[in-house]
Image (cartoon, rainbow, N blue to C red):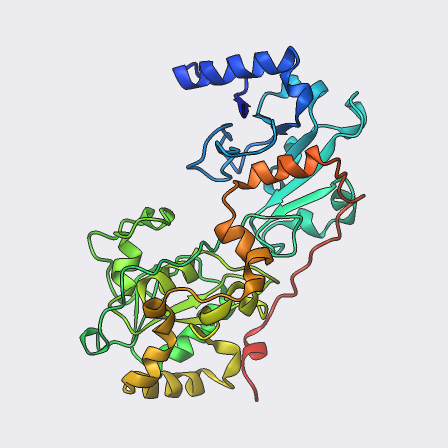
Length: 370
């Protein structure tokens, strides 16, 4: 039986009472047969709940996990803990390691923010405290990507029925470099900008600001909006290795060709026939050159539809996909924390410290050739 428990200061709903009963049973012997993982900190301002499969960071093991495992947020179980998870942006909540009696506890650092916004990732002193890294990076010990597997449905809006305005953009964080690039691009082609950055088009009533957090709905408002455009501007807020967020998911799922600015490792996220599904800003010398290409493509139905071929074919991935990092993220039936339990149960002690992670800030000039 997969076991979960909540912290003692939580509410006492029936589900939570059941979780506590399971935790108590574990203390009497069951948990000695499997790892105990404590998610110690909050995630930003939100308390993590054990067994929650709907809310980030999805702290559950599922019904098919082949190893016994207890997930909890209960700090009083520290003497039984196999591993403690610390959210990088809540590092100040981390307990002093030298005051913990139990030896060989594995420390797991969790971060889904880039080092540009998470300074602890660049601290050798802090990174040296951890054994495993759980992050968006495909080269992490455990990858919890912000980029879900794109949806094959709905099928794209037919070429001739898409809007005359070439592209849509929606940004509220006005990061300097991508904003400057977008300004120059908007001088060359029409772009409907729905966010607070470079705003020129009001959002439809159905597009509530937070609706874009629900990835899996075919009726997702962002998907419904983007699918009416030939192109969607997908500029990451930081050009850090492996940082790709849900903006790319929405554009691809909508059947709108993404115009991507971000990590040079983006192709590792796009296996098989997804490799030809995006347009990369880095392949053009200037915003004007990119605009000219988009303008030509918007009048060439055959060339344009090549970017959407995967939508009609279905996914065609190589044999290596199943064991690749992105394959494990998208199609592994076992939830992330079950896989962490498996590693711990196997006796894997992880690393003696993690490497620092840096992200060199790009300037506008880095994206253009002079």
